[in-house]
Length: 261
Image (tube, rainbow, N blue to C red; front, side):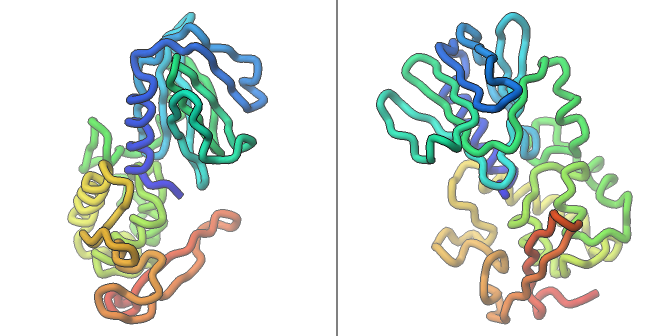
């Protein structure tokens, strides 16, 4: 699942490709927008909100193209004659602005909403770790509303704070020295954890290769996430599927570095 910093970079890519430009052709390959044509409209900019992308467009009125990468989605940019790097049948949105083209592949959400109604699609989200209106106190308030909730579930809940996916959730539990199943109320220093979360995303938002260890070498970018052995102590990493039925996710932790509390 893409993390908040991945989505932030996608917004910057869309801005570099389309911001301030007039759309010369649009192709929405989803049933609800199949007949919609925004050619002639001007793209203002794209904002990221947690894991959501909001591309604001001036047409007959102010519209926002709301997209979400979900598990497999990606936005890519192309110049004239460039071959698409993903299968054509997975394209969900094609936005052309002269010689520049942005293509959204395997997008989990594609919808067009009046810009004034953006709150209806992202208003439920908690404070955005990479947003200009980041509010640490509000994020902590939301995280502690359910003190008995397992930490990993609280971190992945985008209504608590927005931008954390599986990788950061696992790594934040590790760097805090607690197991993912530890109740929020028993986390020794939740404020420090939240600040570390913001720092991790800030450090990684400008680079394609994410690292929570400070090491960009392959196999050494994470402490426990998708590791066979803990990068710190060498203990075999434990992996467990957790979460609501139908939404289970793999959770990683080190039995030695993250003792049961």
